[in-house]
Image 1 (cartoon, rainbow, N blue to C red):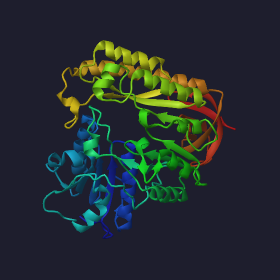
Image 2: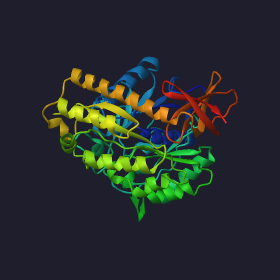
Image 3: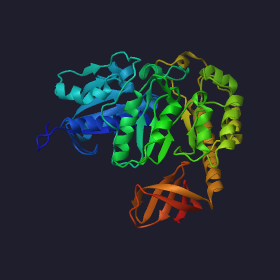
Image 4: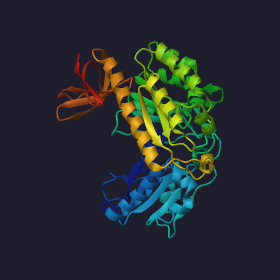
Length: 433
């Protein structure tokens, strides 16, 4: 099928993390440069690109659901499954209907070239070579005019091998982006109007390239005049230099926001997970952040139902999260992964137990987030506005709070100081000063 204007149309859907979002935005640009016409995922397309995720069973299931959805609404489309699931489950994915290409992480940034060179494969084409450890570049910037903030990838892969995780197999070992290539994209993104960049990667704190480290990336980005904010998507606690939040505490473009995965509040579970810290070390670390950076927002991840997690150990996690200076957390049900070491561990919890524990933590997380919001009421915060809808303008503060104001002026992608006045669900309502 070719569209009526003889341009091959292509649509995209991204599953999973911010890193996938960044990569999809770059891939879209590469297709546009190669003469394809980009259409919305809801519209019929000649080619549909699905950037997959395999962190949990839900990610795997989402891929299957999306393929089935595409085949219902757009049965003539040729589907490309790329990314993490394509890397570790390539054989299974070729069995799905109308899948023409399965491309793993080593080659997924070349998918536009692959589709152009082999537009009508008779059988599913599988390209999933072993992932190298070489430094990398990204030829096209991740410009996405649909969003105010832009993601910028600086690193990929991981050497930590936590026992619950198969990312080192899906993404490969840790490797870093060429330093000057990061700055080239950052300048392109700011020239396109993005005033906030979100640093993304699998384990961004391990960035190393020819003597440059993570703080060197921050230093260089801060020198770009058009860039007003630098946000870090997620960073492992043992990789954060103290200089990072020392910088946050002073006048800086760094957002007062850190997302630092915990995973469990029990030391025995952390050891079984092969995490690199104890609960005391984690608590001391984030307490230092809390004491150093005024009005900082600290988020975390926690896994519920890891094999062998007893009620007492879960209670330790709940107590830890209640008392620690953590302002929100993402709760994940333990998911057995094909290549993760934990799949051979005994004591996996039943779904009802996992569901009940998850409910308890999510309710606690809602209370913690509200407490953080309450602490900001009556303060003035600088908001980057993102959307105007039905007379209400919404945006985000540097410390990761969604703010709404009554406004009819189109101030999207503009900064304004807002006095925060009242809490409405997960949003703080305020008034532009």
